[in-house]
Length: 324
Image (tube, rainbow, N blue to C red; front, side, top):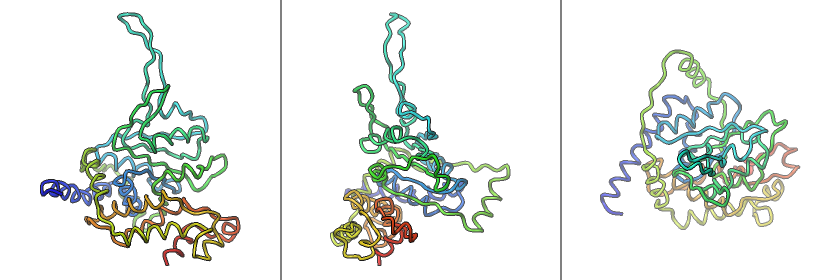
């Protein structure tokens, strides 16, 4: 890496703590969730946020987009939402000079840098599937024509862990497309007190733009250049393979799991470990990066059996056992 290029990257990495601080002007607490969303952004993946109402999921995503000067769109998923409401549709227009009629593609809300798919499990599978091509190929196909999505591109889907009546759980194939599955917890007593003080007055914090979309694209390129040793890649490979009951050396996994994570989990763990290193100002992955990110990367890629559910065993319990 040339000296000028290295100086540029170091300047961008130095702005990441400022970005977290800027988001912290609006979002009280939830530091772990904010870090994981930023990791997904640097790694070029998408995330699924789960938390009860009122934990500022929407506000967190909107605040991050504002601090990054990225175009933000929110889609409220409902049972009557159609694929065209997300990707867009063709409309009939008329040329006023010639009188000739023609079809024009009307871009949907998915054509943004940061897309919030709010309560994704409240819409039927047909509409959920409209996101699949966008998440994987970064384009939309309509009427045989490809429409590329803006880059960088990040989908953050939310779902509510309560009130599951009338919902449509995401199929495993679509869950696997999400880089991270982030669970939000209730704030601490002090954090909740700070929320009450800061959100019920007239003061509204003014956010500054810390990074541009081009800066994020450069940081995503840098993330892939971060060094990871062969030993750590081998460790990730063993960890992912040990989640599969048919080949796992762990009796815990064989007892509680129906099936484990696929190769995409290993790719996600390598990329996210590199992104976490960048976020902490390092250019090399350490074991702590892998062990911290094992939970949000593997928890939606492991399927438990009925016995585990009856005994209240969670996928996090399985991951904790494997990390021992």
